[in-house]
Length: 303
Image (spheres, rainbow, N blue to C red):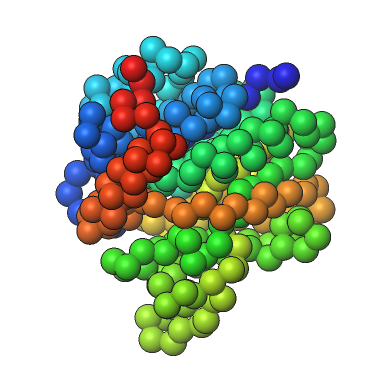
C-alpha cells in the first residue's frame, strides 16, 4: 500500500461565523472540535499522515486546541498559508486582508506532500464512509491524471440558518464534467435553490451532486496549482484585488476542460454537518452525541 496524506485547510478566517475562529469551536464533551472526528475517521480508513494548512497568527491557539494531541497519534506537519506567499514579481495589494483561497492553501503544502493526498475543509463533518471511499481510491489509482471527489447530495449539505457555498457538479458515467461555484445556496424543503443577485432563485433538485472540497489528488495537482497561480493573479489583481480567490475547484475545472485530467466521483449519502453559522452549533453537537450513542464514535476519541 502506498502512503497517503490528509491535507486539512484550516487557514480560513471564518467570515460567516462572527467573532472567533470557527474551525476551533469545541463541539464534544471532551473538548473535541469537528476536525477531531475527521482525523479519527481518516486514520481509521488508513491514512498515514496529516498536514494542517493554517495561518501563522493562529498557530499557537491551533496547536493548543488540537495540533498537539493529533501529533501524538499520527505523523503530522504544519504548512502556513500566508497572504504574501506569491510568485516572483507579485505583491499584496494595499488593503487586502485574506489569503488567496483554497488553491493557494494546497500550494502551501508542496514541500510537505509528495504522495497521493486527500483534501478537506477544517470546519466540515464529512462522515466515516467518505474517508473510506477516498482512501480506497487513492491506494488503488495508478493514473496520475485521474483525481477523485466525494460527491454529496445537496439536500444533505444545506443549513437552516442561511446560505452556503458549494461547487455544483455535472457528472457523466461516474466522471466529473464540470463544477460551478455557487456562493448563495439555500435550503428549500427537501431540495435547494441558489441566487446570484439575491432576488431571482434557481431550483436545485435535492439529489444534485455538490462538492464539499473533499478531493483525492495525485502530486500532479500541486504542479498544476503552481503553474496556474501567476495567471490567476494577473486577472484577480485587476478585477478583484481585495477579495479575489484562487478556488481549488476552478483549477480542477480548467484541467477538465483542457482534457488534461479526469475526476472520478465517489457518491456519498452521508449528511454534512458544519459550523458555517454560530446557530449551526447546536445541531452539530446533537448529531455528534447521537453518533456516539450509536457506537460510531467512542465517547473519548483519543484514549
